[in-house]
Image (cartoon, rainbow over all chains, first blue to last red; front, side, top):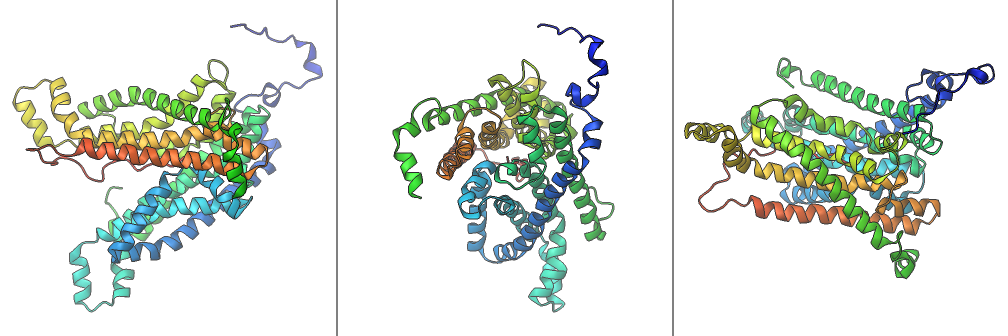
Length: 237
Length: 236
């Protein structure tokens, strides 16, 4: 290992010595000087996450209810979801590219497909696990099938469904980073820029932001689940 | 569609260091190597922590951490780190192995922990030592979960290896990346199909092996196998 001698102080007047110049991994100056660019990337990332989650939750509900009620739908949905879930994300994005083209749509469609597999599985196992007694009691009280679903089955399936939702959300945040290749924007753009220009602070900042975003969304979903299941207060996670 | 067949029909697409054949071999090799490194680390640690009943917080949450850190981001960080890391094979294998450890660790730990306590107590009552308990009681009971952890890890590492192509590494992701730089979607799609087929083959092949290995032998029941306890897979 050759140790590079500390550079002489000769140039201290001409070149500012700061973390950007030193190419440090941790550099607050990066954030303050490029906050606009970072915020824009973060906003794109969050937008992709929100669209993915909303679309996949809306699609997963009817799919899961159908799968819960008809065995052949269940077999089909679970079989397809295993295949979808096995295909690596870079391959999935690439396979969709000729159909959905460059831009966020390719990434969103692929991420919705992935999220659906987790959400439907979670919802179906939640619905399947609803105690027979609860269903019988509601039926005995004259609940219609729709009311039974809305007021008994779906609420009782919430905890299991949320386990799936949390996995889907956290995975979506991470997978969105390679979307840069498909011009979807997001924090992956910064990471890729940092790679091509050997800019460490840019890479680390974007990475940390992605992880923080994932953790934040996870915490928010846990809180939301608590709000939706007040009868479970005091029950451990 | 026809461009795809043209590309596949061209012998040049298959031969040479950047050809489909060599990229596939690289993909399988790097994935296998990373899986091996991860197994050598995660299996003993998971077995031991499960046996002594410690480290549950780590073993059960490591999967969530692995999910939250983007593969691409970690690979880029490894590439920008100084020697002996950087853009080289050992650095890539190490990064891939790190992502492969969580499913192995979680499943091994859970399998050992959830081994039928009555069976463990019976073994202890027979005067078995800690090692004997681990090898002759806990591990056989945990085997289905350990095997499904290996399958999850293998499928996952095949996916992670693809991302190497975006950070200057080889394997099939490189084919996809070359397609992007050449602005040739046929190449992108062919690379993607190869990756998808490799991942599906890994899932199906190891799934079949797993079912064969987990089939209860005569005179034994599958009792004590915790259902649904395996770690949730992570997408990369």
